[in-house]
Length: 128
Image (cartoon, rainbow, N blue to C red; front, side):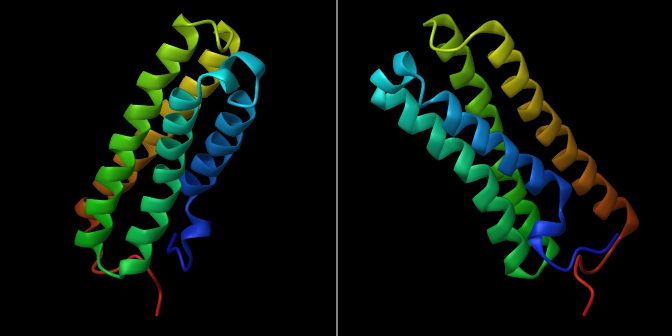
């Protein structure tokens, strides 16, 4: 599939879902009281979506890959922060498993996408 818009990318759509979930979780009273962690995990999850979109908008695969690596790093940051939230009792084990699973899926999808593009030798992701 050739993506015409970043919104067409399934891993961007999944990142959007994760971002929504993180925002909902950080509105909970216990989490809300820890402004630092709440703010940081929100910024990290927004970074995932934003880097996918920005990289796509740059036009070339090399730049896009660079932004995808940053997005993947932000996914890891979200996962680490989820552990903190779990350990401090801000989220339940079920909420942790759901959010962590979503983050893992996004990371796997980014890996698969970059490997596929590299192995297929596609000069461009977008149809002109």
